Image 1 (tube, one colour):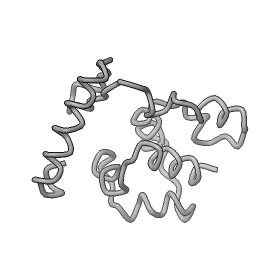
Image 2 (cartoon, helix red, strand yellow; image 1 turned 180 degrees about the vertical axis):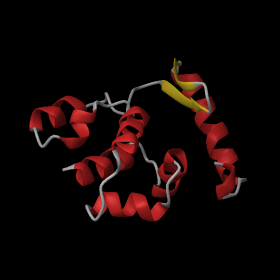
Image 3 (tube, rainbow, N blue to C red; image 1 turned 135 degrees about the vertical axis):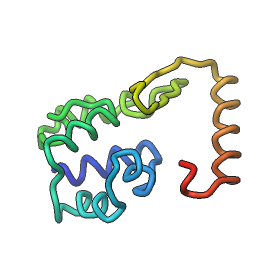
Length: 121
């Protein structure tokens, strides 16, 4: 169940395996193995994954469909008009923004991503 949930969360958030791997300080191959069920993360990494996606660990591990119902709506990385920043040592910060501000930030991120190497992210 963990493999499917991880892949669901990553794809729902439009996060590449490379970006997730970098955020969790693991290799892209590790993410791939987790998503295919070939390996399982440590308890420490499981906590980091839950924090990254802002979900309870139970959601990652449970095969209870009520969790899917609860988190299959816009509560997971689909929060409308919310920007989430992950700072080193500063933790996670969420900002509610207007539709216009969201478009502005998305344009900045897309522009930066086009003009950067993978090492910049």
